[in-house]
Image (cartoon, rainbow over all chains, first blue to last red; front, top):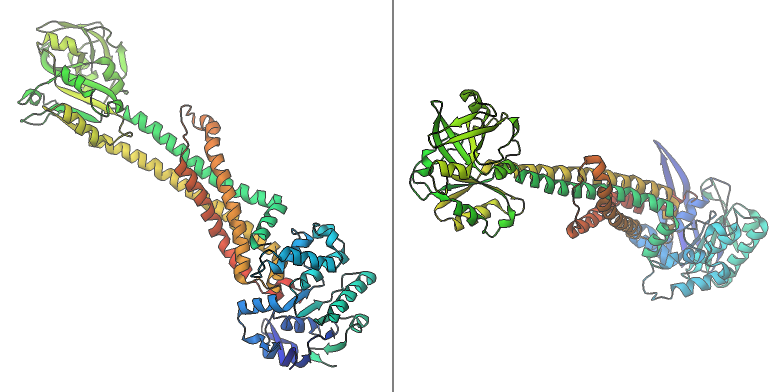
Length: 222
Length: 387
């Protein structure tokens, strides 16, 4: 049984009277512990695919299941719980909350995690330490460089020890040297048997993953 | 970190926005509190002034005959049957439980006589008490009587009897010196001839008799009916009645003031609520990506609403406290200039304090519910845009 399974998934959007298919009958399997890169040009549907795997949107038809959970069958609250328990997101634009320190940003997913009993701070400090930012824990995002912000975003993605990490163009806003460090971190997480799905349009970055899924005009071509 | 910490951090680290929100609501609450406290202070002032303006309790002999008609001058009823009122009764009124609420006691002795062949009614009065009671009295010519034996004449009586200040009026029992003529009052006083009550009692051989007693009671301090009962209790042979029209006029004035200040306060709170609503809506718009992130990392709709409503609660609680402070302090400085009301007094009202806090929190939360629910329902993909 695959960890991530998509069967004939179609996702359409409506723009006025017109219907536009971002994904057409996509089927794919990703095994637990795989590091997969989804490649494709802008508008090919790779980010839409990531949002479906991440339970942020629902397929218009077909089945998306993670760890044998059919995401289409989950209500809004269950879907939120699923994201909290299974996923860690790393975004191109980092999306750090500007009024929270680096440590507080990392603690965010734990703020709604029941049963932590005061261990949240320790977990967040450990995650920050893993990305080498424990010394800057009390800084606000505006006091960090782009690379440091991305590392905080990675720490936030791993703080609740998710089984699946979804990265959307994680090096898109970084210089090549900093981007390389971020990819090294993702590789490190992969070595810990985490499943990683990374969206990128860079062939060089995609080749760092164990497998490349190429998508074009809403269809998987490789 | 808890959801409360997210709300607190947002408020603390966006000090300018928090200050604007708190100030907006605080000004609204403060203005509402100021309106209420000024309204209450004005109410007390106006009620006090109204209480001192005219009589609101009339004490008559417990007559078995026709009721006394002071305006229609049915004087015969004063002495027809029952016990005659005396000056001792006037003193006894000062012993009732609510004696401190009595502003003026004005006894009167009404006697019919003839002047220059015309029948007139002489009203023996205590001039000081009478002038305190009838603040509308104006001496149009001459002066107020200063000694017993001097008279003040109603305008119509002066015209009919062709009397003016300095004239002498001869009676069978003596004579009165006309000290002054009253200006038009539009009441029965225009046709009367006023003299000192002790002089009238002596010259007309009435002993210490009194026809009626008018009382001005500070009825805002206690129910007027209670005072009427107390007067009837100390004067068994008399009949005290409340002058309903006067009491009702005062109650109506009080009611109007109360309604006016409540209406303005409600309006101000609505405006403050609208400020909060627009500010919260703008804040949600500004924080769309942040809310999208919260949703992406597993926040439920309820968590988002909780974060935003907690912020609204804290803001409105602070605004309520600040608004109460503004509302009770500002009238002390502003009221004297705006209303020329130098003797308004403002008292600490714990009920008003609690009400202003509760109203502020209620307005803040109500105004934030819609933006918060909308934020909670944001589509994370739309909110984050990049996915």
